Amino acid sequence: MRAPGNQDDDGLFAVTGEGRALALFRLVLSFMAMVMLAFVLTEAWRIWRDYRQAFVNAEDSVTNLARASAQHAEDSIRQVDAITAALAERLEGDGFDKLDRPRLHALLRQQTSIMAQLHGLFVYGPDGNWIVTDKATIPANANNADRDYFTYHRTHSDRQVRIGSVVKSRSTGDLIIPISRRLNFADGSFAGVLLGTIRVDWFVRYYGDFKIDQRGALVLAKRDGTILVRRPFVEEVVGRSLANSEVFRNHLPYAREGIAEAVAVIDGTPRLYAYRALTRYPLVVEAGLSRESILAPWRHDMIKSVVVLLVLLLGLAVFGWVVLRQLRERIAIERALHQAHQTLKDLALTDSLTGLGNRRRLDALFEAEVGRARRQGYPLALVMLDLDYFKAYNDRYGHLAGDQCLRRFGEVLRQAVKRPGDLAVRYGGEEFTLLLPDTDAQGAGLIVQEALQLLRRLAIEHAGSPLGLVSVSAGIAVGYPAEQPITPEALMAAADGALYDAKRQGRDRCCLATNATERV
Image (cartoon, rainbow, N blue to C red):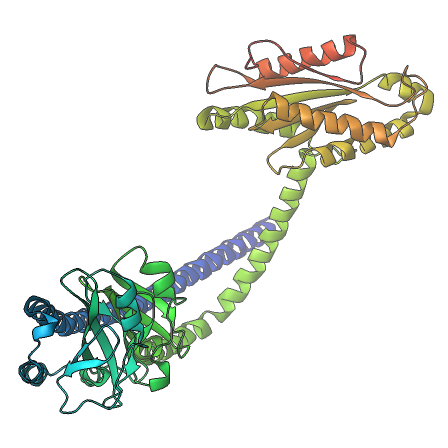
């Protein structure tokens, strides 16, 4: 008697030992997973933090660069603005017929020597001829009437200073930025142009003092996008337009200053830009650091950290390889069981004959749809459909033909109901139901009419029907749960009543319920 008992005890111990081993494996696996996850998350957080910090530091750098460059440009132009304003007032006040050219020449020469950014000061008459300048000599037959700034002032009466595009000086051959004013005679007519010019090299040397990466960029441009100065300086780039760049197209119209990541239209380099529009003048400064220079130090540290992390994770992975293999097998079994369960669940909610949902699916969703319609304030339509004289069809053509007819009508409903949220079910026998969220009476009517038309086009013969073809009757009920209480049972009863109204009125049609579920 004891031998069998001992065998049972051994089996029990074996089962218990196996369970303990499995529990131990699970414990070891959980511990390894937690440790590995902790390492990964900690390192990932640190890498992400360093990544964001690299861009924060870069944003601070480009913002400071843009602010300093904008202030430098504004100060440089303001000084020229001020001296040209004072000279214009003096010229117009003294009168052009009393112009003391030697004295004015000395004054212009003095101002040019004081202001380092100035390339020159010029006074042109109404015909464009040079009247006086700071230069020692005036070129023979010198005339600037063809310059853009001269044409502008001759045709515009405003007295504000105007900043023009970069041109090449006719007196020295230097690239210069013209800053001009209109001069008027006492009667207000055009008397000429007062011009101050700033050397492009003034800005190039200033920008060159900033320590930025080799692929970084500093740009001074007009408000319309025309480039005046750019670092790195390439003469062919001067005068090109940035109007279609990311900053000018999508940022500058909405904010005078900001930060944007963009690919440069000039050289195709991805950069982080800070831009700033000058307060008093129609100019914009951009300062950009290349994305590569921002990420290079971060990437170097990240690679070292990832290598160390991988070595650590590899050691843990080797230790847990056996456990992971068993876990994969268990997951595969559970997955198969889950798929089988899901398949059984789908079969339980699907009508096997038509492939539509069945009554269980409708019951499972109806209450939830009513609640959703109540919360979101939209109408909920329910349609009951019933094939006319279907018993007579079965009696005449047989149940196989009847099943085929039901399948074909199920396909009709699938074609008529197009939205993913709509539900078509076979309610039972030859009865079908449509549940249509966010659908009013008119929308439900259009769907039902389409179903009726599709069925008529099939032209399924039915000698037992007065129409000679298979037809369907439908009843529509629409509820507004947000405005008045409504239950699935009440909506179903209203649709069913409308269906019988359609039957009484001759079939092959739809009727709308006229009770409290419908908004009049």
